[in-house]
Figure 1 (cartoon, rainbow, N blue to C red):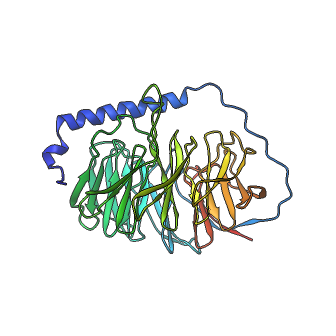
Figure 2: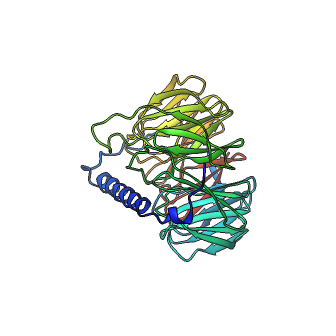
Length: 385
């Protein structure tokens, strides 16, 4: 696959396509905001706690007004806010390692490998830092909603038109671009799948998970999570929602309005899918896959074959975040900022903990610590007692 030339990057037809995608994305946002009155949330249940949660540390960055991701490595947590603040914290102590102000509102944040950190501004500018000091910037041809992915001294960026670009992290040299032919014109403006498995770059392309050669951008495999059905483009929208969940040799992921499923990432083959519409990411380990649907009913499936293990509807319409598997428990945060702790084996509630608001990022578990960032910008590091 040959990279686009500078002339292609400014091609009028390319810009016309970007205008079309931008308009379609804006339409989707309007449609989602114009529904009828919201259903009444389920009341908080009464239960006897058998597990408690405590705060290891917490820190503040700017508030978040759109979905984002935390970047977590072995010993560092990088978080950011919508107004342009980014900060790195020690995973174990919460000590601040560096803090910067990008100088612009951000549309996609944050990607980091612990050394290089990348974000995209609301003006479509990719900005890359090394250990908290700016290295370079590059203007993108259109809007970016997915956090950049940083690995192997490369920075990968996926735009809302689903094109993927690769850069050298050291000098910003543009390496290649991948654009799947025949893609849908309507895009979901939330973080998609952009990660790696072994030496393969995994990207979401509508309802498909595509494996790319990270050195050349050439496709290695393509797996469909199902066939979207509907009478119009909005009803057929089925983008993959990030971040995906890792389960040993599998990558498990949600396809918006369509399904939850797992892919054997080594072989590039589909293991299973099960129908479930939803807007938030799922969680998985080697035995169980867990996710909440669009009405906040939580389901658990056997990771090996997709058989349903349990399903609970005690949290309907409570605006749950993406879920996390935290040891023997499932964690999810609702619209009031309550973290609910469920037993992984049967879904019964074992604990509850109050944060300062709902989440704008999916919770992440690293080294037994659950990390979460609320809309107010508070980053929590929590532990089980």
